[in-house]
Length: 358
Ligand SMILES: Cc1ncc(COP(=O)(O)O)c(C=O)c1O
Image (cartoon, rainbow, N blue to C red):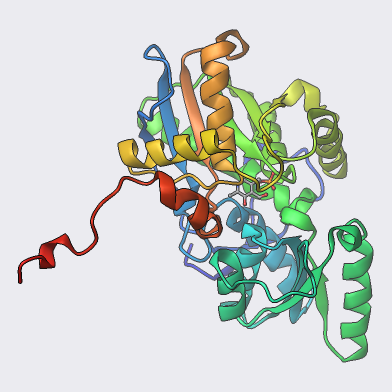
């Protein structure tokens, strides 16, 4: 399927009990994303770790959100929409990916971005810089206002309708039933890769921020009756919140499967808070880059990998086995926001040392 093509969608046979089944998708990413063996620091010697590189699903359209947006943008186009509205944190990967996907499809994007200082000028860095480069209309909102995000997006949609536009609202993280199809479908991709490369995974571990990726991966695995167990490490809220959130997504797809039967949420690794990095997390993130060349992001995959390494050391019995697949869900641009914290812990290299003596 060519990139940007709007094509009819046929689900895997095992997913046909779900409803509604999306009729179309738009290919925005470049699957299959690679799966390879990975030997980062902090992992016990008896564990074989693998990594699925959804961080390599594209460039500005990289990371996990692209899989969800393939179904959401297809729906927006089918409904004749010319504008997308979505929301997230000021460094939201989801908002950046939405803005980047909207551009070549000829849609306008409006982003409600949560910030502590909605009135202040925010440094244009990382995802926010790209949002601007993609011509998105940025609407900064306070944490207080963000609690009413669905209402605010509806109000904005009504205002845009009065101006003659056709808006399409994408919920936070693209995490509704339709977006979840991106990761239901990804199970087919992982199964094919495992078969082709003769790999067996006991467990799959991933970060959880708005629940859609964990919902898709766990529902797809339950329906396809795979033997691996899913573990989602929450980077905000708590386990009770995500079991409920994922149950809501499951219900919207009319499945009787329950979140607690489909996955385990590993709570306890949001650390200092959403998008706030502790020195330990950043040290590990740095060491992973130095040792393996893989860059984790500070807000999602860095915290999830920190949690995985701690759990493997302190609580290994919670995993089914020793062959573990870590899903890298992207987020690289979020790293730029942490440059000040990272700089003092990077290996000291004299800059321009080659020029000495010339
Ligand atoms: C890089 C990255 N990883 C993981 C997640 C979590 O995915 P989800 O929102 O589907 O739980 C997000 C977004 O929230 C993300 O941007």
